[in-house]
Length: 439
Image (cartoon, rainbow, N blue to C red; front, side, top):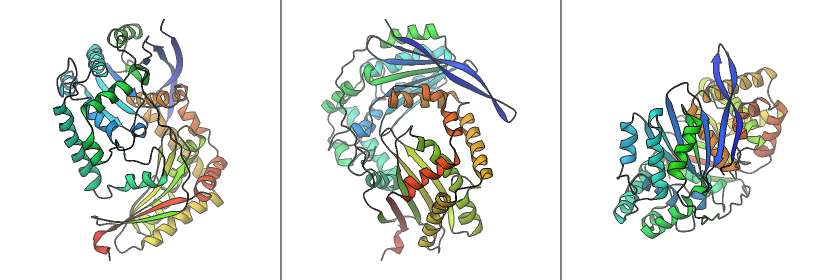
C-alpha cells in the first residue's frame, strides 16, 4: 500500500499591513516504485504547478565528466518514446502554460505550469521522459553545441562572467562544489550516448526523485492520475553518491583578474554552514543591514554619500553541504579599490563589535517578514521550496515554519554569527579590473 500522511503548511494572504494565516495541508505518499509525491490543493486560481526534482547535480559528477548533469537537463527536452523533439515546450505552450528546468550543484528540477484542466497532459509528458528518452547521437551532439555556446555567452564572454566559477573553485576547494555546474568544454565534448543512457538510468529513476503537485487539484483524483502515469516506471537503485567533504578556506586568498570590463569589481567571500543551519537565517539580518538594500549601511555610505561605488550588495548561496556569503561592489571610475575594501571590512567589524540598534534590527525583521510573506503568495515559490526541503532533508516540515525561523533570530545570534564566520575565518577576495589597467 502507498504510504500516506498529511503535514501542515500556512496559506498566506494579505490583510492591510499584516498577514492572515490559515492552514493548508500537504499530502504525501509513495508509489510502489518509491517515487515520493507531495500534493497541495490551492484553488485560488485555476492553475497547477508540477515539479519533478531529481536528486542529482554537478556535485555527483565524476572526474573528466564535468557538466553532464546540466547537459542532461537539455537532453530531457529532446524527445522521448512518445514525445517528439522540443514538443514538451510546444505542448505546454499550446495548453496556455509554460515549462522549464534548472540544474544546480545538488539537484536538477523540471517544472510545468498549466491551467488545471490540463493536469493529465503534463503528468504524461513528465512521466514519458522519466521513463524513456530519445538519446540519439544527433540529439547529443546538437545539445553539446548548445551548451558550449551557452557557456561562452554566460561565462566566458560576459562581463565578470567567471566570478561565480572562481568563487566556488576557491571557497569550496577540494570538494564536489569546486567545479562549475556548466562543466568544461573538453568534458562536454567527450560525452557519449552510452554515458548519457547510463546517467539517465542511474539518476533519473523514481526512487531518486520527488514529484510536487500544487494548485487547483482534487487530491484523490490527482493521486490516481499520478499512479496511472508513474507507477509502472521501474526503479533502478543504481545511483551512487561521491560524497562531499567541505573544508574551510585554508588561508586568506586574493585573486586579481583582468577582464573586458569598464568598471572594477570587488568580491569578498566567506564560507558559511550548510542550508538549514541557524546561520542561514541569522546571516540574512546581517545581509540586509550591511548592503542588501538601498537603506543599508554600505549602500547609503558608498553609493549615496561618498559616491565610491556604482552598486554594493551582500548575497548568500546556501547549498545542501555548505554555504557562501559574498560582499560585492562595482567600483566607480577613478576610485581606489583598496579604499572600498577597507570601508566594507570596517562595516563588517562594526556590526561584529557594536552590533546594531533595536530599531534597526526591528526594521529588518519587519522587512524579512514582509518579503517571506510575499514570497509565499506565489504557489510556485512554495513548490520550489518544498522540492529542496525534500531533496535535502527528506522532510518538508520546514516549509511551514520558514518565516518563524527568520522571526525568531535575535540580535545577539546575528552578532555571534558574524564574529564566528566573518571575523574568525579566512576569506577570499576577488578583484576584477579593466584589461587596459594591466601592466
